[in-house]
Image 1 (cartoon, rainbow, N blue to C red):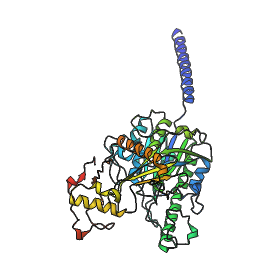
Image 2 (image 1 turned 90 degrees about the vertical axis):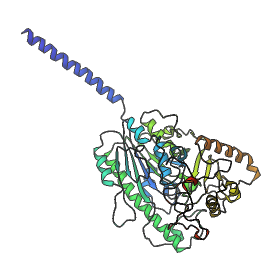
Image 3 (image 1 turned 180 degrees about the vertical axis):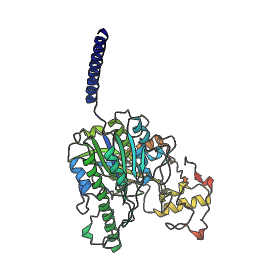
Length: 484
């Protein structure tokens, strides 16, 4: 009988303990909010000017416009380089191209970089790449899952891995950070009828020759590619709403502008950036705060409850998502490299931009090319060719962005702006020094060793002057020693 009483008392004690501790665990769980899912959708080669929510009533962008009506549109979002790989490397590392090492297309970042795959995994997230990659090495970009683009008939480019994305949404059991990277509207484009100039919206930088049927046909194919990408985006948004709860942040952007590709003009560096976060972001709002692709990773880390490392170039803009219009940058910067691209040439540029002014230095402009010569016959020949290809671009450019948003009126020679130009000039070189830039004030013009599109080799994209015997003339020692 005594044993039965002891067993009863023990059982009651166990049940009471379980009830007390179980309730405490549930209360603690209720007090600890679940970390939000983060989805970043990245289009490829689409101007910020080519969206309904950014003022273009000629283009059909219903999915992005839907996001804009449900979330926040950034007017002043920028990438630091208007090329695919360098732009993406910033998103994933929080560092500008010069610091992370990916300052030309098709090259890898430095091995010492730490990317979103490490930072966000350490904060409890699956980190997934679904679509186009264009970044390396794998040791830096170690995705939890990676799904490649899928070939599809009757379309000009591969599609997103939609089946994998849907399956993951249906079964996700932990917080995730998914980068969905489309190959659209990057060319090649659909073969569409040319239409008329009234079918498209043109701007001061691309309104020349708009009666040309070839130009109109190119616009028609580009607009059609945009429409195809909208189909993919719309499908994904529907699945987000169906399978995921409202504790999901959805960001849309495009890696750089199409008409400003390879340049440091705003039409290349100013990117669309739209964010939806139910319950946090007020619908149908806009922000004038200047943000940068290097800020995306720090923002994700703060959202996930992490501490942003001090050695990252970017800063979190979480406070902006929560409605506080507080600036985080005085300036954003741009990098231009025309080597290792299709029409490869030696013509690097750097830019610095405030909310009011943009200042650009073209380091191999015709007016300074003599200062860049090295005394090496063949190296100097390619330096001279690079300057000649952009003979109409001056060494310095200065634009009043507020009055001249399309950067048509160069104020660099206007003495009324000398103090502004001097301030921006000094600040730009301070930043270049911090980034350990290989360009200097002294006229150093290195040849960057390519892994594609060599300066001294013929290709379908360019001709090497055979009469001048320049083909296959460059040697290993003629190139700048870089990490790749």
